[in-house]
Length: 300
Image 1 (cartoon, rainbow, N blue to C red):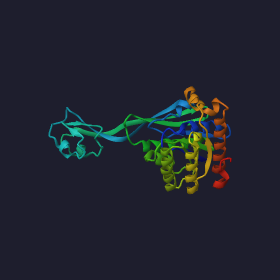
Image 2: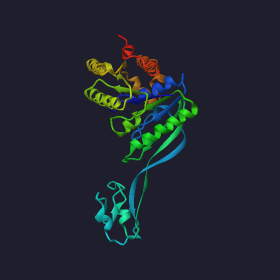
Image 3: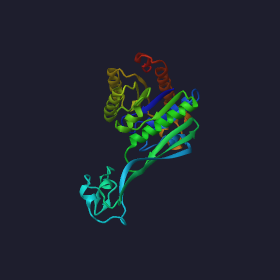
Image 4: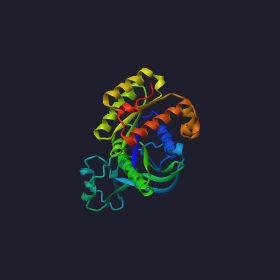
């Protein structure tokens, strides 16, 4: 079983569109399990239309609450809260860190600290295979822990079904959720774009990948909007020893496919579809054989 994580370092590079297309291409030849680890703003479901068959609550963060009927108004909890989360004997849930000092110090036992509902995760069926995905409640934290839950369940499903491959749509950026999505994966596919922010964030996420010992390959989406920028990105990847597995041209049909709720490889046979197929074929070569970077250079 191999696990491929599609990441980007930043949002808006087309990462999810490519992950959905990779899933569509892979499911015909391999047992496949999917995971959407962008739990703060998931969108893979918009293209794969999963049918939910299992729902679980995600509880992690602890918050204090005060029983007004039992409270004597002594003020000890407010005086000892180091986060200023208690004011006028009311708990501000956004400031509370769940440390439990107020609960321990309350002589009347009016304060309780309990786990809060931070989100939900799901196991669903799609036309490409089972999919594990999740969504955080608005404004909540600990998304890195939820990503770990999603990946663990996806691996369990893959083992149960003896699947050959897990494709994970990773979160953007380089923070805790990305680290949770990357650690222990077999390959990171970094999707970038020929812009200053794209090049900058590509370098950052490649540093993260290298730090955690995860091999990486890169591809440039919408390369023809700024060919010089695409070449600069490829030069940076070459200097780092990171294979560039392809260039994908800009095509408005990508947006149209999103509007229709389909991976672009299922929507059209345009040039962009052929480019995505070549990228996926090169990813498989690297994933299955550990080929040298020189074998993965783009055509021309």
